[in-house]
Length: 253
Length: 253
DNA sequence: CGTGTGTTTGAAAGTAGTCAAAGTCAGTGG
DNA sequence: CCACTGACTTTGACTACTTTCAAACACACG
Image (cartoon, rainbow over all chains, first blue to last red):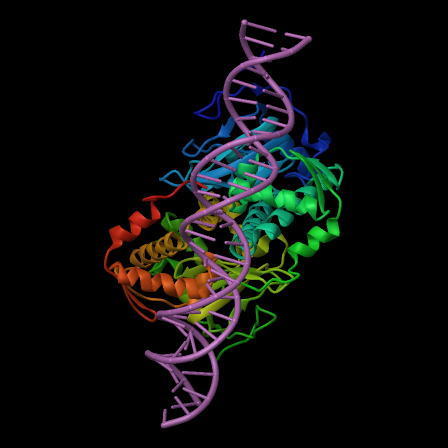
């Protein structure tokens, strides 16, 4: 039923032959095809290879794997993390439906981070050489792809700002607002969410220890900003969180 | 003598009409043309518009400026920084000869950070639409440009790792090693350098206060790792710095 | 030679980290 | 079906690191 073409050296993941055309995918407004004309979207359909299932806890790719494709999250949730020679590691992002994975691999033909599914997930496989070919032909697609890479750079700069100049509460508030905003864009509630990641993963992303994350959640709850039941979060005072992020009292770094 | 075509809305900077062909530029091994065949390099020559002088302290572009071109540093030294609505700001990088500036602008057709010259500098102006045109035609160039964008993403992930999981000494050591390595690639001494930026700018980049940076320099000097005379740095024990970066004693975050 | 910007250093305060222990929850196997 | 296990979370007490505030110092520039 499934043919195994194992993209990732480290984990043999079953590809799924069934394909949903980008043009009829409900993520087309959030994913690579954003803003493309119908004609161009039809071209993208040609480009997207197959879909691939990634069970919770498994890696879509790992640092060092040869780079061949980028991936668009169709369903599910991922984290990406880098690690240094010594054991340090850092979560560099969390990706949800419509977001791309694997752009790091272009620079050296090998991935430089791990992408791990935090829940059972499905991705669309986009062979990079096909993408380059088609974007030579269709300049709308070319421009779109460049925008996506650039957006990733801009996003990373935002994370640097967070890591370099915010205190724990500000970081967590910014994180929650960012998450809910992205969830809302996908049709989910703006005020109620289930975290897919552990306190430790949040901490790694935010440059904090897991205990600090936990304490900060508790403080937000005491302050009436959130209701926290383990990973179930309800946002009670969004404006309050926003105010924390924009410095009520902060000094520039 | 100089025609003023003012790329940046905020600062009128004199363009310089004289052009050095990429093919005869001594930065070609460090800059956009890396690895391109002679034929392709000749094509790049067509793409690079003019050179532009940026005096120390002035901005090549500022956040919000319309995006039209990317820039390659020919001589000099830049910093890029982002800022949030409230006054927080964060240096996101320092760029030296051969490195590109402006990739952030592609995502929204407007720059999202400031690029400021830390010494009198010269950049090559590369109109982005020309770059896209040519990279549709020459796939070596296309690939090269994609690699450069991807490399920026990978670099940013490295900075996140630094900001998220290293202590002050480790950050500064990593910073110095990175700087000297890049300077060395440009033919400068591996052990002796003059910092182009203030303690405050280093601190912003590393997520530290200027006093912490200063103290850490002093400590490195006391420990016999460096000789520090204001901005004049001599590295005495490179291996010692390296050892600091690779955790002698660290716990993963 | 003064002025101003940038740097160094000290002392005190504050924030986040460390270590430890108890609590929660989902999944497993008796 | 329920108790057990293991992974994750919460909380407390204490420690360590970085920041803050303040003052003196160095150096480049006009």
